[in-house]
Length: 173
Image 1 (cartoon, helix red, strand yellow):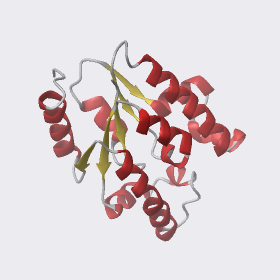
Image 2: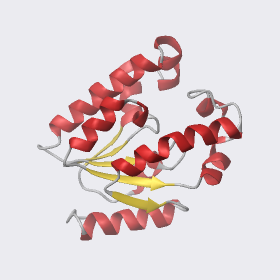
Image 3: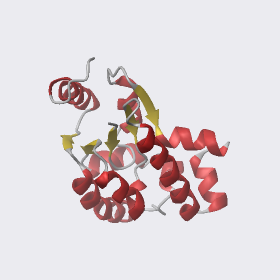
Image 4: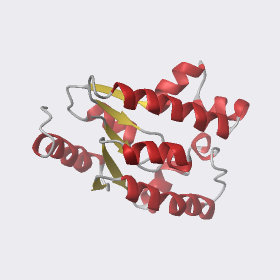
């Protein structure tokens, strides 16, 4: 059984992945895809398009799901995977655990607004565009979640996830 960290971009999924005490394998999906592509995710999307990226993302997610019976992994998902219906359905049908880092829009915007390279995908050119994308994805994250973390600080989110991994799921630190 895999455990997925879900949330909008800049929610801290990749950072938490590195910090959380977990004895299994840790995988950052965007990092894995960039390695497969031989270039950054942004460059791949600019060259091949978002649809091709989502197809490849789904294929990688499918591989991770198939291997989860052998050894569970903690996986940080990209913030936009919910835009691809097949990826959402795959996770909904999975016995995996899915932790949604519910992060206030204002906090995400503070983290993103001065990082133009992270705003390119999705055509985010203003707070209003960011908010529209954020609001369109929230229902998908909510539906997918088996656990919701109110993510206002990475330290408290890390502690809550670690407690949950140990107490609810029996994963050792």
